[in-house]
Length: 206
Image 1 (cartoon, rainbow, N blue to C red):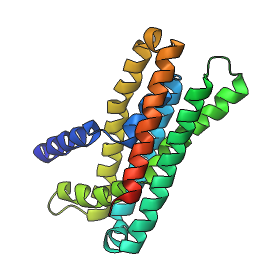
Image 2 (image 1 turned 90 degrees about the vertical axis):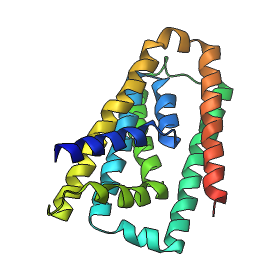
Image 3 (image 1 turned 30 degrees about the horizontal axis):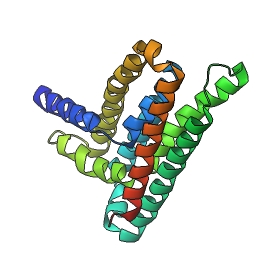
């Protein structure tokens, strides 16, 4: 059991370290504040847990088996990525920042950060199919399948909260450099461009 757990955590580390849309969004939101970045992490990991539970119930098998269902999810995911990317590029062009926002706007933005992380993860069909293929490999022999997979999904989400929390912390430590208007605008442009490219790639892939 300890060996299986260590192998699972090692696999979680490899999964988290692979760059993807969630990583880009977390870094982008962390440019505004640690709070926004961490809430994006929590939203993303809520999505990870949801897909884990769905995989445990066997529902993601339908997505993996149905080309139509997968294509619908793929198009929705591509649209979400493109919307995030275009919005980021637009904000960078207009030079919008979060420093002068009032309390009500900051609160709404906090919810938007959490919602953004959650939506981006749930709209990714690859996350669903990956959860289906990833989690069952680490269910101990003889263990009840459903509780074991739900537990692994929870552990996966908690692990990634800690991992991506380091990204948020690092961006916060670099605040003095990243807070400069020109640097922030450039990073926003890069983040938006990457999200748009990922959206286009997801839309055109077979």
